[in-house]
Length: 116
Image (tube, rainbow, N blue to C red; front, top):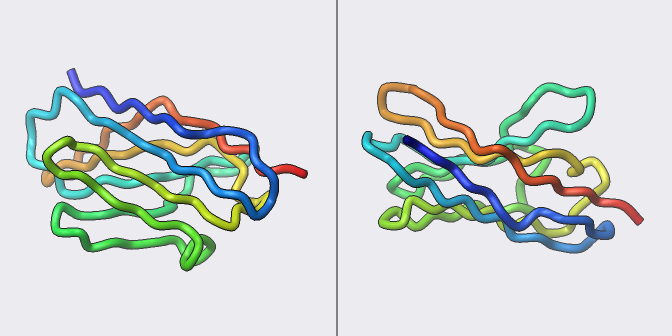
């Protein structure tokens, strides 16, 4: 059974940082990429960042220069370093694993709240 467990969310003030982690277990397939998505209240889930097994990254324009995604392939772990957080970064952050056959797996999410 595939499980994705996120950690690292919390309540921070604008300008502060958080580091999210996601550990994937039960992986029985070849991973195409891992990544992070987020969903703000009343909005659709949106891509934040993805990273392939070769380290090719992709970021949403809204987080470029502030967030950094990284990965430990052998441990099926992906990280998201979030810096200079803004109130509009508030939301539930979901870890995603996509197989080479384009099947998606999701974690349960971790909340980031940015508020003064």
